[in-house]
Image (cartoon, rainbow over all chains, first blue to last red):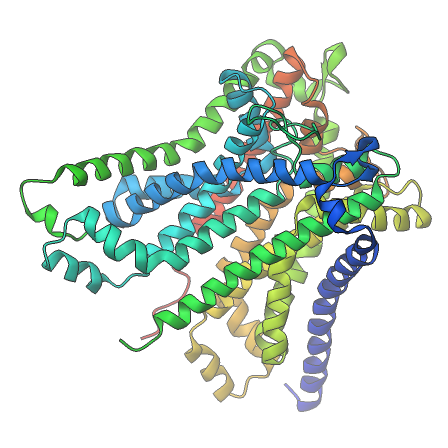
Length: 284
Length: 295
């Protein structure tokens, strides 16, 4: 290639790269800026705690925050033990090439790609109808648990696998039983990864809408029990934007609260992950 | 795998208990996919039996209350919006990953990657809301009515760019340094390095990202529901309002009964099979050995 055409090619590709990056960055800044611009004014302490009035056009999101907390709480109460158990099985109780382990891993990978609306259909059929839970916080929480389980399991399993083989060998040489090894060696060493996995699942659960609209329902009152229907933040945004004329200002504020929550979750998980790597890289 | 108990004939009670419960939990988690499939089949069975799969494609329209169950228009809607967003997102996502590795100053590259990660975490309902209040009015002023295939394509593009970019980014990061050093030593320009070394070695990784993005676009519900207008009609141009299969389920599930409900589950089954196909392909590609041994 002649030098001149080569510089032209270099320059033009460089320009294309920067243009592509700008085309991704601008809408992102636009979205965040728009949410801040239109949402910040509505945001106040009373907005966070008061009940929605007039179908959500006025008032706040108190009961909705509470329902979100309950749905996500139910979800995590199911996900954490199941995720932990399955991850332990995959990393401590099977060989890498064991067919059962591979089967479960493969099925979880596929499950992680299943669209949330499918989980909504499944949750509606199983929890609302077969289990007879109806539109309730329990149904919603269980449905979300099915959805976030694969992400939690794979993250936690990775963190178990990152533990040096030597540590397990030493534990075995000292005559520790498997439960003791897990409790005293594996779990403490993998704790940051465990937290990251749980936090990632939490983020996915809070952001979800499609799986919840026909499992936990629309009701925006303060839930009295786990069998009540409850509206989460994401469902509230959807309802205000689509079904309530004049609901946009409060939808903006709710969206800002939701994105803010997710930002905190996201940052804390990367903070833990960063601390974890620096911790693991310390000389022995 | 390793602990003394496997070498000693007697196992303690707690050992057995933990082993059993862990096995049980793992089987439950592994069986979840089958359970989901089984329930979709069970609920869509009446539709498959009474209406028959052929009717979903031969019936002219979607009037479930009048026993007309044509999904064709919505299948076209789904296809158009998915393919359209993929055509935009695939180049943008891959260029973004290349930008991060080879063009951006290190600090900017890191920040850019953080930004894309944040973009990946923004809930689809927020994308949909932003599309509804910002993007749709702009398109509406340009070419009424506004809620359209184009709006859906643009919103979906920004939702799947992170998927494609992050997978591409990590597969580029795995290219052996020796390849890059040799290319540089041979006097390759930056673009030649990318074209002749990076892209060929990361082909499988890039394709994995695109397939995962495809699966995500296919299954996305809230954002397309909010910006696409939801008219059941085969789109003839970019500004036509469309309804996707996912949006149809979300809109009608709340009040559907009998055959109507079953046919919604059947469309869910169709979606699920497509997504499972693409994700399995992607996972198969991801685990394939893509580089020659470097030693």
